[in-house]
Image (cartoon, rainbow, N blue to C red):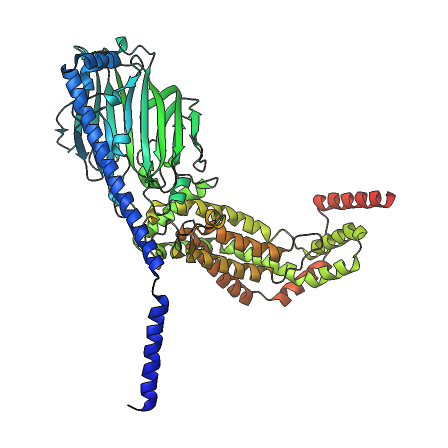
Length: 617
């Protein structure tokens, strides 16, 4: 080994040693990290202690109550009788969970309250891979309000029947709360095969003498659990929604963070606790009576639950009432198949008819033979752009006519430079367009016709459960943002507007949008007194980066593809269209005599009147 090699090796060794020495954490850093680790362990330990304490307290409470009602403590027994009245015997018991399952859902029912306890959707998971749960167990409430004692059936233990299974695998279970020999409250749950619907028969024979209200008040409350990657985006689509009987759908504002209390002003056919992609809906056989109300409470950020929803509904005081639950995905065909107008749970916006009759059928048709949703969105975009191509072509021709007339328009602008000549300048320009047979709005109208489709797609992608947890390229979930860079530090103002990540599809969309705008506005000259369109387009593109960074990556991907196809279409059209031929046709059109339209005559008269007024001034 020569001297140079030895010297080089020594230098490399020195650099490596120096690097490790310079990057070695100080004792202060080590102590700080150790303190952080200890704090994390302490928090986890305290959580475990709290959970153990809560479980011990609950067990002790149940045991104490059992002893009380059994007569081991006569004073407390009298207190229970005062609290629960004729229902005192049902105040004691051991909670037992029974499960009905049909492959699509696992419905857990509790004998405490005879209520739905938890619901699992078997075909779905949370973003983090846990079983998808719609109800949160102990926090779930469902039952009648017993106004005489100021409590609900949710606090009482029901007698449980065995599960009865029909020949077609339909499962039925009954929960009965006896009051007297011929008076009881009974909830009968029926789950059919391959169904997200649970039928509930409510029997209350002889209860009218004990529940003295004019009707039965049904209480329903549930914690809405976080299931998606973006809690903020999920919150924006999580609200209470209801449909009035033979009337419209209304809902609470999902973006409102303060508590919402809202009265139900009519007869309600169904009411749903809607999440981003899943819903729990209670459906009346006909309708719930007037006078109900709902409440929505938004929980602190980063909690395991998003919101707490509750509803007060009224049933007629019959000895038998039928209701049903829908526990399932917000999937348009699945919702529509329930024949209850549940598809209206999906907020498809003003142009929802385009989504229902065009976009969803095409999307489902493509999905019938393709499984890659990135490819499905690509083909959907191509189909829509092909259908809209005639409008695009017409818009381009109108723009081309304006472009070849631009030198003549510039001459008119140079001729009338004073502020007082604005009316003459406008009149001369409109006369030029009239003689040339050019409509200044001709390029805008085709774009306006396409605008509803853009809005429909804006609503469709974030609401499409088909994109949920579907990966494509670097995006692990097309229903939410595709972060290529993320950070945990909360940057004031920026974090709330932009987020703590960078979405690549959003950047690609904005970049392609800038290219399209640059191509379309390259021939536009700023008009005096009017906003500079080029600057406006740049500002719009930058704003889109902020708006779309937290949105569905599938939506950004669609707009990116649409912009790329627009660039290709513009290039092809430019090869097909000859500006010289367009100018020649315009000049030939000028020479032909033309009769002014009534609108043009009125416009000319208005301009002349304005000119007279200006001269008088």
